[in-house]
Length: 359
Image (cartoon, rainbow, N blue to C red; front, side, top):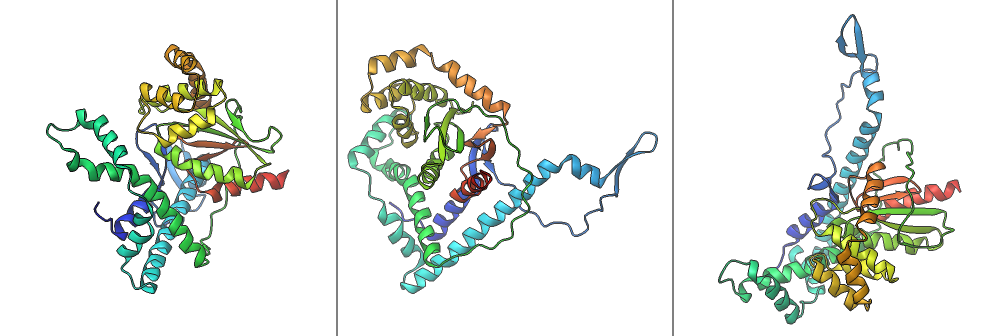
């Protein structure tokens, strides 16, 4: 398999860090590009529009009307700068570590990332080829596509290992981020019903309602962070999962139904983990295979899935999500405070700690 250079891997890692969710516009929800602030911003009493019989609108009135979206833009600019700073730091740390070990940056990344991920078993590679060969150009051989299959099977694991390794470098270097954060806007809370499969104590002071899509790669990425949150606050956080399959993820609605069929047999979270670990296998026949693998009563499961009896529950979750402003996944409501996208642990911690302090 061709080795990915450190610059390519870093670029892929940084690109992934700038997108955090799947949205309804069929494209990743990317943070806005930072722009250089104007040093000649008008004063609040500057007239920016006139009309009718001497009526006018001032710059201050405009800002007041747009205070929420403008605050979001400032937050996006900060997050973009913070993510860019993080990437800048990682690049310098990789270069310094490579020099320290008398390696090229490419050799360092290969040793610490590529070589840490085992080659998939031959039978797994061959199985994927057999499943896909009818959709491949005529005459395409196994050997021709094997490298691409290996990349597909190991790609997400390499990304995860890269994030872990870069985190190790930052920890060892005692990296401190001191980028000034813009003032936080007033907290807006939504009334979100905590209905659905849950884990964590019912008495927890923090309830996180997650709207998610089993076909969304960013939802899969968020699992590790959510698990980290639950581990960090074992007695303080209750997690509730609600369905929000996006219209352009064609297999997501049935996967959502299947997870609820598994929930009827007490295996929601096991099935949840299986679906996110196998996002390329969400077809109905695969959904049934997953149920069998997990030891569910397949007759009951198949009847539940084929009947579509859970479709109404999925639709109700979607409707509730739309009412509180969900337009992409994953979306988390922490005691009603929206945190959109696959955000890092620190973003969850900031909101949770502020909520606990109020308690």
